[in-house]
Image (cartoon, rainbow, N blue to C red; front, side, top):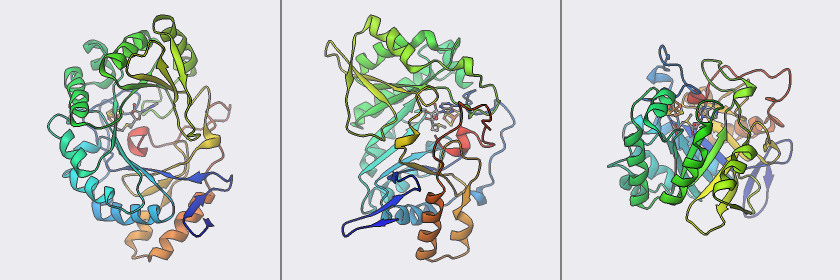
Length: 336
Ligand code: SAM
Ligand code: SF4
């Protein structure tokens, strides 16, 4: 841990500053995206194992006092958690938070987007993998495309800015829709980000051949809507961003986690809904801060635990190595 007069910065053993905490607040979900959850027989964590709002706030305050400036609330589906607005309001009030965002499937956004904004939510990311009803239903297990698009509209109307759309692209399943997604970005004025399919699925269906490199998608879009690179100074940004050369609103971004890993600039850590710190999406070990918290640990003890955990952050993921081991827990449990 590095200390200077103005601020405390958590650094891992590779010198990366840790600024970004993703908090999963539930492992439950009303969708069954096949790359994330099994259709049936998902075993939820018992409620007693899930961090209460009080516990989340206590931990978030400690993390922020250690230099975390960005929080993202995720899940499972975070909007399933009761009175989410009150949690957002309390997180937004933590001194030192510069950026408060959430990732959701948008199913429950209509009627609540404004309340979330008023509670202090700044940015929203919505997951949407297909623009046709049939394919959407196939991918998510739910026939709810219209409702999700309406949720995106509700977020835009509420003034959440920016609204981003995450789309996991899987070869042979939805890779033919990238140009339609680019058109969607232009029409709605949103940033659509294409995510390479990662081996974090529950059914162990991931195969390398199913990953569509982001560069391939970009070329397909560029042929129809010429693109210009958006250069951002933020090295830890996961997406390579492109705007439309004709000046149309919206953007496309490519999160090439498999073919062009960005681990060298990773500033993220995760807190799972059941109170484990994960230092990488692909960690095979977790660090049980809930046990420490529930044992009545002091703030200093929590700080010491967090600093020691960050020290163990992995240098990089090993998806592209022959000895890659898929983590036992899947995206819905880890919090994407
Ligand atoms: N339920 C919310 C949602 O879907 O937006 C939040 C949680 S979800 C686990 C967070 C993100 O993880 C989503 O954008 C989803 O598309 C992404 N995701 C889940 N499984 C993935 C996988 N195997 N590969 C790449 N992205 C994945
Ligand atoms: Fe649910 Fe999100 Fe996973 Fe889809 S990606 S099953 S919406 S947690």
